[in-house]
Length: 553
Image (tube, rainbow, N blue to C red; front, side, top):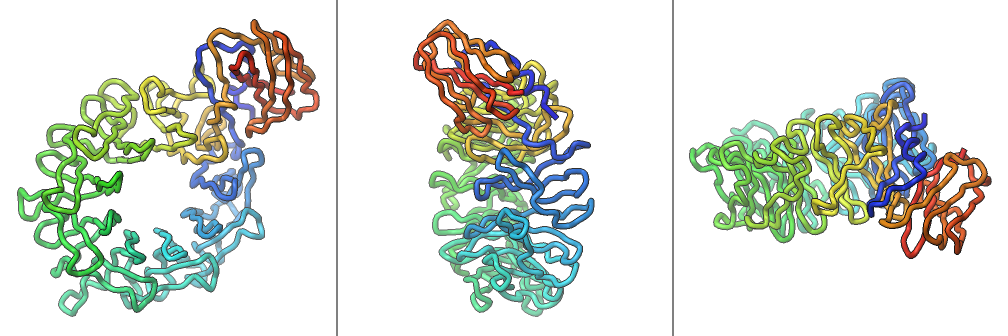
């Protein structure tokens, strides 16, 4: 199905002159002609985008595209139920993920981009039960994760991508329930995580506490029993400097910010932030190591949840800025952060601009509104719905946001300035409402950004937008060119009010197909040898260029 908005844009033969660029949008493939294919879990591997999608026949399965050819790679679980693919990771040149089939249940798989090379790594839980491996982290040239084998419960495992190299590290909690390791992070060639050895506190068990592993069963042990009465529940483990910071409850001060150097003696509460009541908790979260500072969110009854910073000492732990004065707090439920051009971007609501993009350098004065995309108090993101998502491609920031309720969520790009922040649509004169209502899954490949969107009646499908200026429709301020006919079958005529120095033809992947020089205000180009499809004609004149979208019929 041809996107009517792309078609409308390509039929324009006169280009307006305003020193702006209009990126080229393309629906990569209408994977599910009867509905939404809802592409998810996009990942760039071996110069291709791997993702999952539902074609309406085979359920949600593994797909692959190079931007030109898009196909179902393998129907792992035949039938309409799909294979429940997730957890894409790349290790030592291998693509690993989890998937379900009727014979093995949910297990660890690998793919090299071929049907034969897409196969199960190991049936960790023999039979159809499934090991449900997840929470992967790279450590010591392997992926460590939590999984179960049907005997030991959920325990700590590792894989190098081979069957023989996929093994359980140790049985930290004997029996069928397992230790449920989680919150993995690495410091000084050791893996730290939370795990439980049981709840029989009277007989030496410690509950959910902080653990460490060197990758061997003998070298895996508890770091400290932070809460001797019950579990401390360590979470949000984050490496910063030569320590790990996390939240934990010692049974006296509530859930507060803690740090460890990996030793029992070096594990301590950094500060009791919410100390108005002895058992109150500041519930630290969203730890971000940035520019030599550790930034995190914390709650107090006086300020609500705001952003804080710490240097690892009580005196050096303080609120970064009370962005939203009062008790409500500025940190929105769907909080996200992103680093762009050496700036830390945060999604905050100051009650004046609504939920918008803020930036901080780790100081109070350096914490300020970055982009007010939707002027007024509504904000450019619904704080209780899908989170703002970001991507950087070729130095440009792309994100999902809204500036009105008629068009709702759309694709935006920015160079970090208000003037350089623009909404992108295939045809701005005919916007498609809710184009990016779902999490788009931004992933870059070459000069294109791939994402999930709905710009026509095909539903949510895989789309791309060109991010390279050479492939964008670029207009300059004093020269107009006419490119006709469009669509064309044999010849394209180009004419304007200044001399043409050269004309290049690109396909939508950015490949130059032809280059014709000229010293005239008019030029005729033979396109009869081009296959049917969409192309970009780039006209160079007086050291400037303009690019025009055409259809070869």
